[in-house]
Length: 423
Image 1 (cartoon, one colour):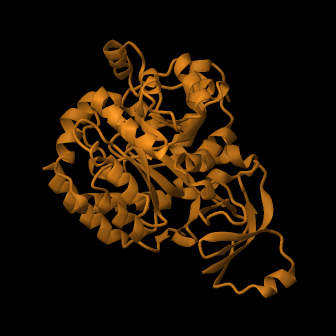
Image 2 (cartoon, rainbow, N blue to C red):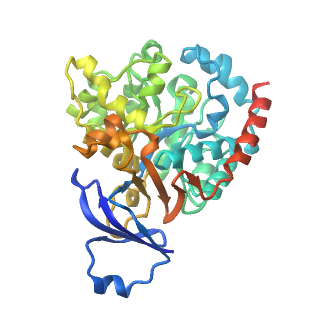
Image 3 (spheres, rainbow, N blue to C red):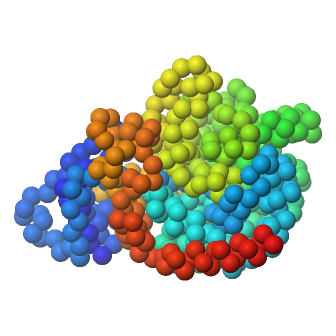
């Protein structure tokens, strides 16, 4: 399908400047960005032409760490801190899950994603076939990260890596483990063997809480980052999720190895896990992405909230406003997240890149009066400003309506299945 977006302003993310012009898509790719001549327009055959009315086209957000199917646990056990939340509430419910449940609850998350401008998610979960089905039906771009641990998954790691990296253009898979504290040293070593065999990057929850960090030091005499580095976990790249309790040496290792830190500010605040000094990561040359974590610990899947918190939480630690440039945060949300997931064709808007595009409604009150667009978006924007979401050249959400989801039927299905899980 060929679509012409005209009368647009475009934030390519190659710079912070808005350019006026047009953007054309052909099937799943961007075919033109700029100001065409009348002759160029007349030579094209468009299936649809959309007047953007001065609104902004930009790359979609990349949710660089989430557990999509955990929408079943939204607003459940909200008073718990992380350890009790996991072991008393979440793990017992997760024991009831199957592909049918992960299909429904992931589909609900995907609807929330596209409504809020998220065009790809880095999803750590299990019962993956149900999630693949939901991704393909909705049109969501999903890259899995293994959650293997002592409870299971280590022996399936290689098979899953091969299977889901050959599961269609919307699906990918990265190696990893759930966390150091849920995975024995023996099983970590088994996972590392697979990574070395395929020369592949690895990811994991890491240094999320103070007790996790101290526990690893007590067990092995080093932080989780130092342990993984020593074991060859990061020999072919990768990164970690949360990264709250990093010390200077941890950041040095991440910087020298070109690893990615993914911050999940809302979840960390809600679970009292702590606050990372984002400005220190930037100063030490660590690339970072942004994720929502799951709906059970956030509770929303809202990248606008995450961007605001990522841009401001260091202010308190530094006693300094504007300690993190909002454009750095927006780059993390749009571009670096794509690099983390291996989606190199989805990072910016340019000819030949994937048509993963969102439209920002500049007539929304939160975008007025117009001043610095990036600052407005990061500091005052919310999901209401997303007017359209396109993934792989297909419009999935437009002007308040979903094109691939029967949303009312989905709500009823999720309500019934949530009752079964929580019983």
